[in-house]
Length: 178
Image 1 (cartoon, helix red, strand yellow):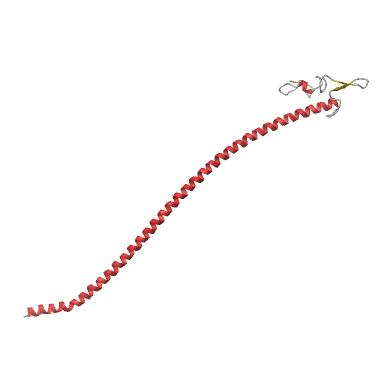
Image 2: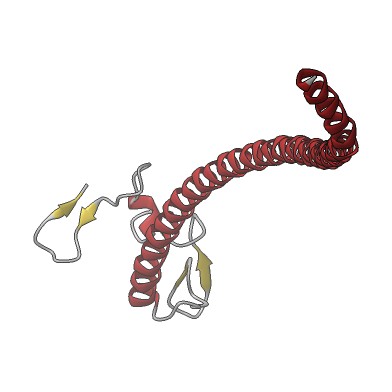
């Protein structure tokens, strides 16, 4: 009988413990549901964060591509402007050489004119002499010479070579110009 009593007692205990176990299981189930919902919410937040990061990555990659295109465009413009600058510098150098050559020619021509005009002034008395190319004859009659500018020997241009130098004695009197 004891044995029956103990089984009965155990069964009563089990029956009386059942509500406690049930409540404990329910509370544990609720905790698991809360934990599951929390994990679900965290998973959703991580998914949204991942989507935002992917979207940001794609937009930054597009922006980087656009910036690369702009950089390539700017580099090509820079190369083109560099070529134009080099061409302009070469043209400037060529024009500078040409201007210097022309200045030298003008200076040489000016020196020749100055030499010619000083010789004429010495020979005729002034640069604007009325008697240039004419000779006076006694009795006040003016006779024109055979060529404009006087005789061949009197004209400095008659002693000029095709290269521009002059024949005859030099200005220092010691050497002969050729």
